[in-house]
Image (cartoon, rainbow, N blue to C red):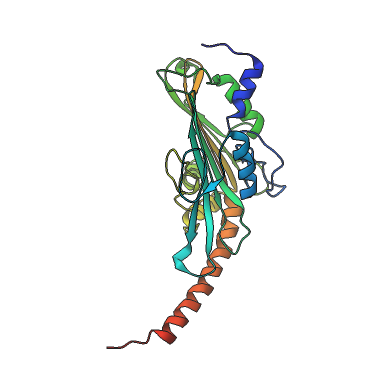
Length: 283
């Protein structure tokens, strides 16, 4: 195992997407952030973070070390255009990192409801010099998010072999930690997979980017799961060679989607009326 100073370790954990500034979320919920950007944050917050981390400005044509933007016009209806996802990635000599943030659609305010980060420090066979050690990462995760409701792949017997660990946090709308049950797995766990943001190193666009698919939010609501975080850790010989964090505000996503669907119904009605007036059948 490599040794490094506490200051160096602290600097590395700064990469870990775990800083928690004051959140724009409901005060009843947990304070969740990725790369220092809280859920409920704005594109301006992302731009400030990106400058601090050495990324360039926004671009509609994705390039390394720039903030990429995915523009959506839902069903080509007027008044529904917005940037649904901001993401970025860069590769350095000793690590790679990527982030992605998904925004609520019109008529809602342009706010982040789901976020993700990926980092790698070499790989299982060749961990880079910038890799943090596993105990430091676990301490930092617990410091930021509290005690996880589920952990796997972190058993002591697996500590020296290349292994994948995962930690989960889930809260209800009042910010109370949920117990992990079969129901939680069937609701919150599956909803996270459908709604969470994938970063520029995996998928370029969130699979529910608009968002118009109600299933993730319905599943989360069935499980009383308002907020959730998942951390995936690749570790070997006590060192972390990959770290991914996903954070979702299901409550904000659900409420925003309800208003978006109301808008879509209005816009569809207007579009159908216009078609009926101007596109008369002629055969």
